[in-house]
Image 1: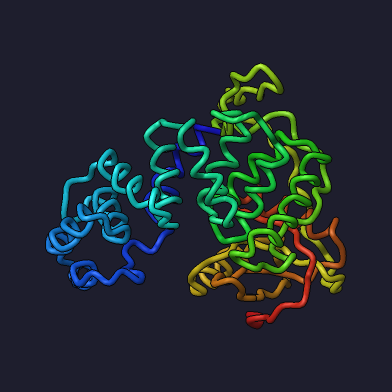
Image 2: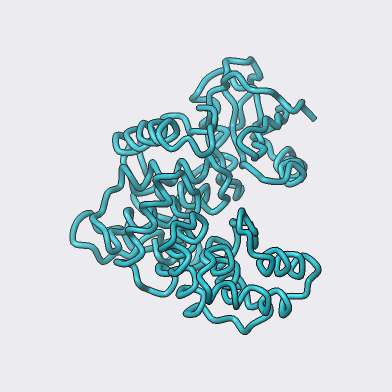
Length: 339
């Protein structure tokens, strides 16, 4: 899946964590640096943090690493960012542990990254779930495990990581029905075990209704086809691929307790903007949008649908139009209202 990860790496590795937090650090310099950063005076922020970081303050070390990663107040230097993350991570700084694992991965130190990614995954961190899930799918520095890869990607998607939804769609083309169902069961267990973001089971996809197609669309190779076991098919090199007939849109709007989920967003406005576009497709003709919020994210659901098969057909049609989509069973959640 390295080809797909390379497209998403910048957004996965450079955002997703609140960039600078003073936390409980008592050092006056750390807070002064945070205040300077908030004003956009990045150079002064770095000057405030550096002495505290050298003296061993974990928050200052984490902040300085972020500055080097983002290239604010100092030139971008991923090697320096990695080193400051390492120092803070060794002191148990949780955000540093997560970012250190991601930095090691980005700097092609995959074997070293695994132990740090595992620590963050155990806490339910979505970016680490995405990256480790990618590695497990490819057998990259770890033993290939498609069930766990799928489960971690489901969790990352349920937490609102947009790249995870795209990657799940790619995984569906390779992972068989039985393995996907086991992956979903694992995702449900992880939901209980991590406890970082308590998400309703409606965030998880329904059991897949169809077996995966034998080959991806042109140019979409979600994993390197160089492993000895279960080699992935190469992308189809056709200039004008033949498409199967698109499934028809559902005719009934009877409420059987099923919805389709088009995404999960930190900003509710992004969910409404997506609905403004997706609602024009034939798959959602006559459907209403719902915006339930939980765990700091707002989901975009549409429906109702009478059963899982109808919801899955709608998802197939939406995917053929370029939208990410999961069929979900409606649970007890607060609705943000229809449109």
